[in-house]
Length: 198
Image (cartoon, rainbow, N blue to C red; front, side, top):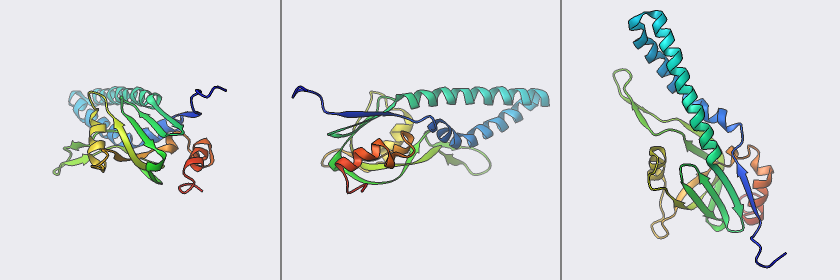
């Protein structure tokens, strides 16, 4: 092997089970949409209301599935001697060096921007999110020219180290491998940060 060979690297893609887990928090929004469409469509009769509700909700579900499929396909996790390189979709890239990892625990993944819902007398806000499990640490974040709204909201909530400009993030490892502590991802962490995962 040449001395100029690239260091070993492992690449992981999101697991198929992530689709269902990510779609579950959207159910409330879909039900709310179905009810609103039913009420509006019923102005033209009950049958029209049912038809409008079924078609509208079906189209919204199809849109969410296509968007979710694209998001899952765009998420790539790479591990190497430097640390963790996570392409989080939408052109957002996180790079965490092994020494910058701070712990293991729950990770909250925001799926939609926080929106105000004007339902009833009191306006409320709602944001679909998914609880995952993974790593926490300080990351150099590369952003695209136009940052999606959900990512912009997530970035403003992240603590920032003023000296380095790094943001404290959570990497949802269970989305890439539900049993990651016992699998190849866990083996990488044990090799470079045995203090986090003995």
